Amino acid sequence: MDKDRVKAFAEKVYADMAGTMAVGMAYVGVKTGLFRAMEGKGAMRAGEVVAAAELQSRYVEEWLKGMTAAGYLHYDATADSYRLPDEHAFLLASEGTDHFMGGLFYFAPTLLRVAPNVAEAFRTGGGVKFEEFGSEGVVALDMINSGQYENRLASHWLTKLPDIAERLQSGGRVLDVGCGVGRVGMAIAKTFPKCEVIGLDPDAETIRQAQAAATKAGLGGRMQFVAKTTDTLERGAGFDLITACDCVHDFSAPGKTLAELRHLVKPDGALFIVEPKAADDLQDNINPIAAMYYGMSIFHCMTQSLADGGPGLGTCLGPRRTMELLRTAGFEKVQLLDIRSQTNLFYAARP
Image (cartoon, rainbow, N blue to C red):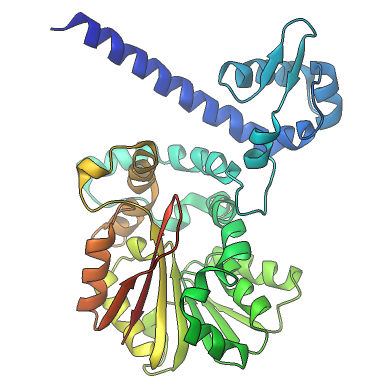
């Protein structure tokens, strides 16, 4: 046994555990508004952070030290002050933008809360159903995705489908499958005010939040959200565009669902898909983002599919299998779109 390798791996274990604790502390920073309280303020003494955030001093003091040790804050020992660098605030105190990363921290407690149930499923089969993650899980997913959908989807991503974008300018019908709290549909409704938008999701709590969000955005009268699945829609409904963002890998019956979408889209329409960015082969997925996605798969995406009797495709589905599924479902023209992203892959499928 190589003692140096043992020591190196022990250090990795400590680093991973430190990262886990940093995620928990960062969750607190997002949840309580501590990052926002420090944004743009420069160097702050602990008491100033306490006053700005209006939180309990002892907790804040320990949090400041922990976030400093984790590299999130900078500490000046001479002045006994803490600073949230602008570059860090850009990612941590920017909710609603396309560069906000705080939603990842918000998601972590939801995932780890079901870890005992998932561990049991390793022995017994099945998994954790989506509704078991509760409303906090819905909120976390929205925090992760909403900024990108609101700021990039209609203005950038859909420009890769110029014929569809042009058609939606004068009307058309859009179906957003696995709509979550409705950010995709709302972005489309804002950009293309003449088109009809329907959001579809089987989870009633998700649909409730989507309806509330649309009403708050002043779009409640222009959008329809329904807690249904694709098999309840009339075959040949004639949608110009169907979107499926971050959900194909979650489907409990992916082949059946994609085939249903094939019959719901118009002959000259398109299915637009966003999926997590992962390579087809494991050796190409040995990196931090893929490691994060495999964890999300075990504790969220794969387990909920297995809980519903599905295949558990997993978060790291990859382009080869995704395109195979689409072609098998009857889509003849399948394309991996040229859209640059660190975390997502984009597909267009046409009948």
